[in-house]
Length: 229
Image (cartoon, one colour):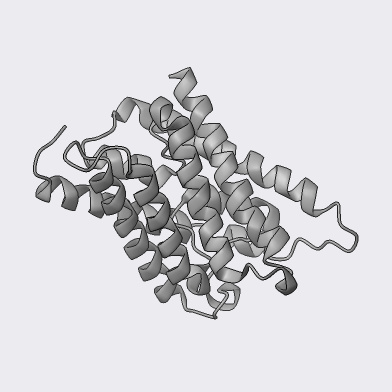
């Protein structure tokens, strides 16, 4: 269990540092040209790289909603759920802390949104709370369907990391304008701590919606899966 927890900590740290780091450090400068698409790709790449680095150790969840969805889908042991979630949240906060130290090393640095998730006036595109809620539930649902399908014993072997990483990239391309894309409570928590009061006040949605989406996906996939492993 210790090795799995360490792997989840490192993997989630990399997810936050790579994905949110691309938003805070690179996307903030239009002349670098990465934009929303670059940030979306960065999040996908963090998952692809970690899938092959730690997937054989912990399964590379990197996300409390993923762990919960896999448990509901019959793919994950309940007794490991809380240690995994604790490691993911701690890893995300560590990644955000490293990012804060780097970003604050530039003269005139202001925390601002710090790649936090939000709705209403804190949505990149000004989308409502309802729009954010629906987006996060549906996107997390689809993410878990991809994960459960790609990692099934009947799926093509060796390609799960690519499918999951590309799935997360697509999810970000769709939903960055709406919520800045969470689908991951650990990622949201890590950034909200540094962004401040407004982000902490809206954080509930980015725990509740992904977990709802993950639970529905676990139940749906379990019902339609050709066999259980």
